Length: 88
Image (cartoon, rainbow, N blue to C red):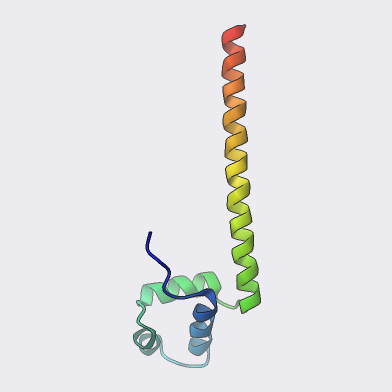
């Protein structure tokens, strides 16, 4: 997997520069990113502060863990149903 080049704090700083009036093309050239990346970041992090971004990252990781636990529980449940169906 490709390593992230910019941290969330850096991304928010770049977005704040854009809000201050810097043109998108100049901003992307300065930081070495594509305009597509910039607009993806703007959709995800637009209007967030650094503390809110850290909280968002924590919630996303917690959500991923919970989804994995749910998937495991559903697999166990399906296996038990199959086992009981064969028995009866």
